Each structure stands twice: as C-alpha cells, then as structure tokens.
Length: 118
Image (cartoon, rainbow, N blue to C red; front, side, top):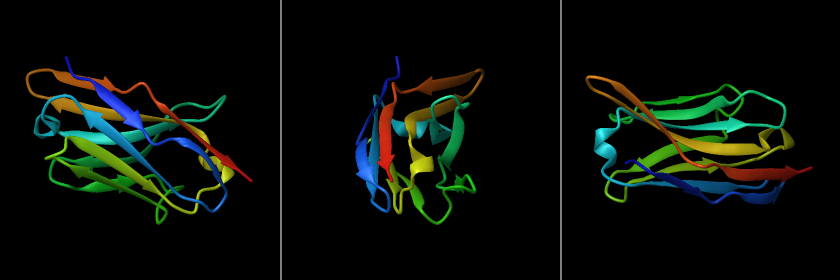
C-alpha cells in the first residue's frame, strides 16, 4: 500500500516562500511520474507541477518561474519550492504519484494547506 505524506504548508505573506515535501512509502523509482496538484476554495483541482522518472518537468503557466518541483529518489521525497507567492496560490496542495504497468495506479496524499495573506 503506497502512502504519500505531505508537509510544509502554512501561512505566509504575499511575496514570501514555502517548500512543500511529500514522503512516499516505498521506492519512488516505481512511479512513472509525480506531481503537485492544488485546489482552491470553490475551484477544481488543478495541476501545479509534475516531474517524470527521468526528471522532465512541467508547470502550469500560473506558477512558471516561481515554483520548482524536484525529487530526491534516495530520500523518497518530492519537493515543491514556491517563491514570490500571491493570494491566488492559496489552496490545498496534494502530492500525486502514478505507476503504470499492466494497470494504471494513481496515488494521492492527504493534502497540505497553503494560505497566502495579501
């Protein structure tokens, strides 16, 4: 059973920074890709950033240049470095992992709240 546990959320002023972490149970090498999604109040969950097993990254236009996704396979940890935060970044951030072999498995963490005060 794969578990993803996020941490690092909190309250920050506009212009500030936060780093989110997601620790995965088991080896991250088994995941084809990992990602950070976010869901603001009253809105649908959206992709913020993703990274493949080979390290290829992808970002939503709204976070490009401000967020950086990275992974440490030895520590089984996914990170999201968030800089120059603004009120529109306020959301619950979820860690996501996908494993595809015979079947496609999708795993989610419980989420961590990020609140940016203006």
